Length: 274
Image (cartoon, rainbow, N blue to C red; front, top):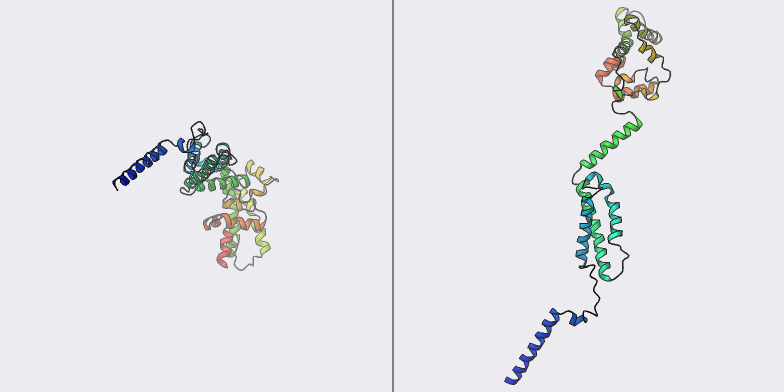
């Protein structure tokens, strides 16, 4: 029995020694160092290391020109990331399974980090989207309607503006004066229109005319966009909006009740009667 136990102990020592040698010297299990070809260009080629390499590559690119970690430039990041994947982590590199695995996981890391940066810039902080929308609105208006400072490119002619307002008030007040002074006389629509047409000449006779008034009145090349041109109720007058439908829409878009009382009192009166 004692001899048998001695043999068992000896065998255990041999097995332990062999296992230790195998762990310390992998070349004993896979061949000599001269026989095993090791790719030293990629020191760690598992999926996890590849994934983090992709993340780091995007972070490095995001910090440099032309991005400089500026969310205004995030819109081009995904396109540049595609080029980054093709250059640094090509999916057609089948040198060996380790390289292929590394590149595949690195490409996923690139996509993941691009998504994270886009979320930070475009979702977590809404200012990018708000500013983008505001800028787009300004460009649309500038290209299709008016430009910044449109109303102040030319100093307003205050006398003409005042006279225009007076003419409008005169036109709207004709029926009130006529009904007050001679209620027994029937003021037909045709006669009302005829009297209203006298308002402009009457105002000019009372305060005189300017050369600037004549120039503007004689302008036969009126821009069709003059109707409501500066967003003011005054630009809805007949001189700017000769078409009745166009003029009415202009009033609805640009005139408050106070504006109507100033520029179109006849409209307010008609509304009150109805």
